[in-house]
Length: 405
Image (cartoon, rainbow, N blue to C red; front, top):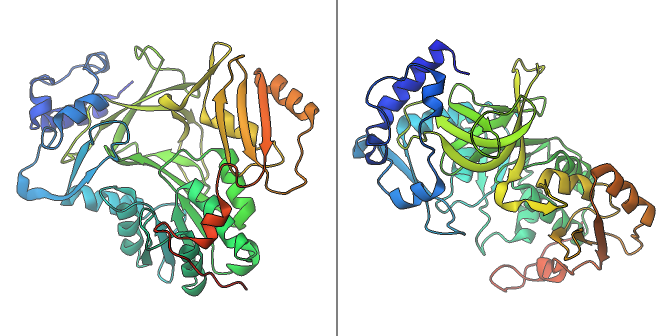
């Protein structure tokens, strides 16, 4: 439900959005009078964005456009997103208040993709906005394979590692294979910053156990830019002054009760160069209303992409639940999951130590707790991820040398 003040903001945004060719005919040319009228506006879909790229969602003069990005297009035509100077100023300023607390003297190694992606650029802007030093290591180049990232972290005395959560696990593995002890041999590291994929509580706990430092999350997407970030208490809070988030039921007809899982639909609340009006993000989330020590009252739990759901016994199993199950196993770092023909949820997990073994009683307890039929296979290290290639070769197939302590 939106207050009268919020409805005024929504109407201002709708009037602004009608400057884009796509929204000109889709949005009313008179102000909305109620929240119910807003909820009758059509959804914007990923297919709409594909069809309108690259210019159909721009609603500012061309000379105001300062930065262009595209989605990775792994599942179709890329989606274009444009940012104005005002957009970037807002994002860098808000982003720099991330709970990790970037400060002068920090050396932040940024291992996100840079080419046409957003997150690496936004983190770098936030780091420099706070007077800290950015190390743009990228993540999709032969110049900085994992062994070199380990080397850079050591020789540059990196204080913050910013990367996707899986990459943080892979960097840890590469460092250990080179002979380093994570909690001893990276004494300057004080925090990890994650983004680019949902960070579950189980994955956060794993990373904190590996590296011995707190982990801070950020949530967003190329189409919208950042939408939420962790406070100093490591709670993910939505940017409520910049985005209106509806959490809808599976039929996308009504909002779910606070704390229930639903489908995220986003509307920009500021005058973006490429605004989003009721954009179906494809993410399943929970919005929990509870006071946080930082002063915020709304916390966001991102449970994963709709397209990544597994269905078992007539109900969905999402990433949050999958990683909660894996977190109870003797090995947790690298795994994959699928549905078995007999209806069981099948986990294949790499052993971390030669002696790792699975007790049938553990699987039975997990089945009872989650109400699922499970199959868990522990497989030799290297089955899912080639460790020798990790250390011996870079992405271009050239030998990489990493000194041991």
